[in-house]
Amino acid sequence: MQSSTSSNPASSWLSVAAVGIGAFALVTTEFLPVGLLPQISRGLAISEGQTGLMVTLPGLLAALTTPLTLLWARTFDRRLVLCALLALLAISNVTVVMASDLWLLLLGRGLLGIAVGGFWTIGGTLGPRLRPEQAAKATSLIFSGVSIGTVAGVPAGTLLGELFGWRVVFSAAAALSVVVTLLLWRTLPRLPAQAGAGLTMLAEVLRLRKTRVGLVAVLLIFVGQFAAYTYLSPYLINEAGMSAVSLSAILLGFGAAGFVGNLAGGWAVSRSPAWTLIGTALLMGLPMLLLSGAASLAPAVVLLVMVWGVGFGLLPIAMQSWLFAMAPDRLEAMGAIFVSSAQVSIGIGALAGGLAVDHLGVPSALMLGGTLAILTAALILVSQYAAAIQVQWNPQR
Image (tube, rainbow, N blue to C red; front, side, top):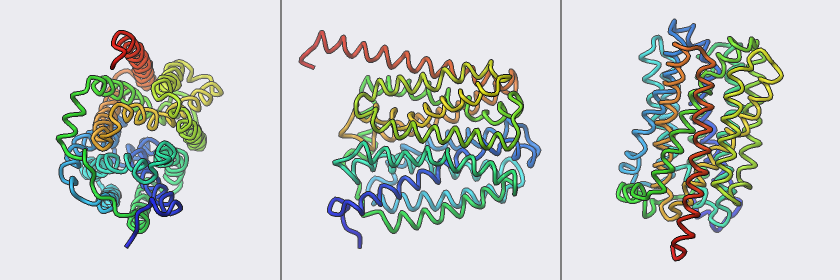
């Protein structure tokens, strides 16, 4: 029997770290196709655009799964829910390893989408529950799993894929999923469902005008990110002429920059979530636009990818903190809205990028991504000034 984490600070930080490792496992698995896309495409004799569905399908299913998670898991201990979702991740990876055609491949990735949607709905909101007195720091640690997954998981997967093949990489991901499931079971305390976790609260949060503005911002920036990021490897190999070794090194650098962004994000959002998110969108969008025309300049390509990586590392905590500030007493409901809209956007982004790549070439995906990220910064800036004007004219509110 495990006790409440509030009485044991060391135990509570271990619990936070375990959720962060779960995030690492999910992010690594979700985005492995980014580095392995050319290999998988060749191995199954399908186009790169079709292979991009490995990112599109999980995103769409995660979005559909998110509100359903609030329904089926309404009364369940969050510890049990997270363990079940990580076990499903293991099954997903095994299915991908066994895939002999596009349809079985997509079945495995569909199971991943269910796991992703459920995990981020529940796990992404646990920082304030596990360490209420240090909520921003705990949330940053959980989301560091996203950056570490990009730093270590995706580049390591790309390198292992070059050495041993993509099926070996997904086999390793399946083994990691099992280990993380056991770790969560061992370290998490009992976490009963809280008020505000059901679909009724979801509807109440959606009725807030500022929530709808937030949804548009999530849509724009995540569509932009994954329209471009899904096809970063083809850009670096086919447009910039990078070798497989250079590709792994650049993806590693992208992830390392993301880790720096994640660490900075915990500090920045404690001062202003909105302005942090505006800066994040600019750090992502401007490099994407510049990369679309800089393929022949290797040093510039590397530098721009690193700046983009910093912005990507900032994105999860900046966006979630901005949204959570809108409804601090309805964290799971707002978390579900964030996860659902973000995952829809990931799927749409990968699909839009694939269509752009297949019809207009890889640089067009980067141009699309950069434009949408810049529009996100403009939207948040306008919403900030509109809110300030409203307060000026209605000071009692």
